[in-house]
Length: 515
Ligand code: NDP
Image (cartoon, rainbow, N blue to C red; front, side, top):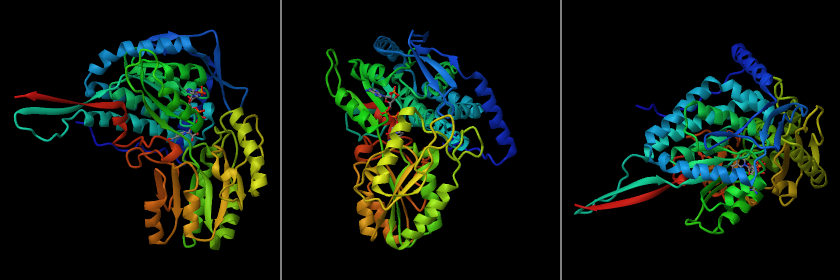
């Protein structure tokens, strides 16, 4: 009997024993940094002459891991291996497949801090953010295992006299799993295991900024005995290895999370029929956001300021759910801006292994340059009230930055920056606020702070985002309770961590027998 799903508890770092356990994990992981790793394809460890070197973005001289730089040849090998493993894996019962996920969840729970510590070094998450990422990964394992059992149950069909009718779900085939670096464990684990537990075999190509965390998860799956070929791990550039997976005629589906530009490119390529291809590829693409928080005339202003700061600067604004636009009613605007600047200036930018770090570095040199460029653009589009520059340190550190008095159509109000940069816009009333809130091409997350019931109810219906929050921050969706995914250019409208998600990796078969 499987217990009902419950979210994994977050670690309370104010307890000395938790803090000490985390410090021990940091030391242990630090001692192992710099190792050379292999990919795992068809149950074999594969290396290449080219190397992909992953570095600590907060201390760029530190090598976190050295990985194979796979290209077309290895991608081909990985697809073939997944294809060969599919018939046997797809014949297993849902219970057998789910057990691998339950076992992996148990092991990950035991080594929770080690997974989190690796995120501190490889992607610059502070301990609380890393801990939440690991907890979410455990949640996905537990949740999707239960979902697979639910989908395997007899499905209701209308009785027809003289015939026995049934409908059941079968897997699709080989999937290309292409996650981003920003939730290098949770999103990677969720995307991979949802596809696997549904009976598909996969090639997992992690983001090039976070191969070591993905590799630690693959090791875990090997430890729980996942057969070779079912999960193939292929590190290498997306534009080469990833693209080969997308274009391959034996790829049945692509599960992607990342930027709008890459996602749209994948959708376009997947729509073309490769020679020998006998199906229409299914694409699940979760993409960017330009998430807004509306602050109403009558609201708990202090809570709104705290919510905006947490949503904008948690993990340096590198969450697809991060608030990058605060839309504020004119009657509370000046007070809001003043308190926002004051609270932002209290944030500490430091290496994320340090307990006091509110923000670590941004993920890479490319991201660093892009964000600093946007800060320069912001200086021409708004009034700088906090940050506006690099922060000291031997890594990609940027001070949390706020621009006030920004027009709705400004670039920093429209384009995804994916860094610690917040634009604040003044509106005359709730109607204008609604218009500005909905006035981007995205539709991922958002929030409203208001004491006006009618405004909250209206927002519930008309603020067009996949995840809307009333009187709380717009980040931190929980698996099961807050299925996650956006509208418009934010993606293909799926909901990770929800009851519809597994269906994306299944197809229904109807069988009727004359009796
Ligand atoms: P990218 O789009 O740059 O990369 C995502 C993945 O795609 C990486 O694994 C990358 O590999 C791969 N890739 C890149 N080019 C290609 C290609 N031509 N063909 C196939 N694969 C390719 O996004 P980021 O990793 O920078 O992630 C940040 C983005 O993700 C933001 O836009 C954010 O909003 C979005 N996101 C959306 C979420 C959602 O649920 N909607 C959740 C989390 C993030 P490589 O690293 O080797 O280039």
